[in-house]
Image (cartoon, rainbow, N blue to C red):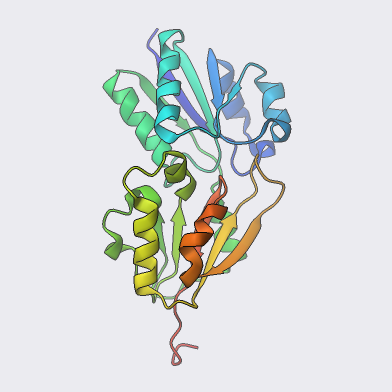
Length: 234
């Protein structure tokens, strides 16, 4: 039997998990749940009682742990949140590791936090400027993401922090944002409901205090920076 990694998601909360995902994970010899505290994932543990919770460890350690399970197992499952096909650097990294080790890789899609954010902030009816989407891991060419006339959503800062931020991405992100936006411009920290939270939370900070505010990052925090509206646009 060829080894296979199942990368699946329950969406924004465990109750959204699909029968298809449950069926696929039930065939795995080892399952890792990468988000959520034990007291919040009772449904998932009732479905997969032998699953291991590994949410709060550095990113690269997480990759090694998952891939190391193949020493004893032919089929390994990873259960994350959000949509593993949308701006998910974790999914991309695991897929590359599987490719290097001749391990089959299969994804099971789910709802992303993007749906909730766009709805709650009324971003569905975009003007011609559109909406910038970026992940912290892709912040290598920041100029392509920063335009004060275009709203920005920045995902996966939590993954970078858990990895120890070896490339200094978080510092670079703060400097780039403070270079482009005025000090009193609003930045929103959005934590969408998942297995680690009871409800969606929104915290507003100013660009000038962005660096100090990063210590408030939660597992599922997304940054939203609205566009700067000129007097003629208002």
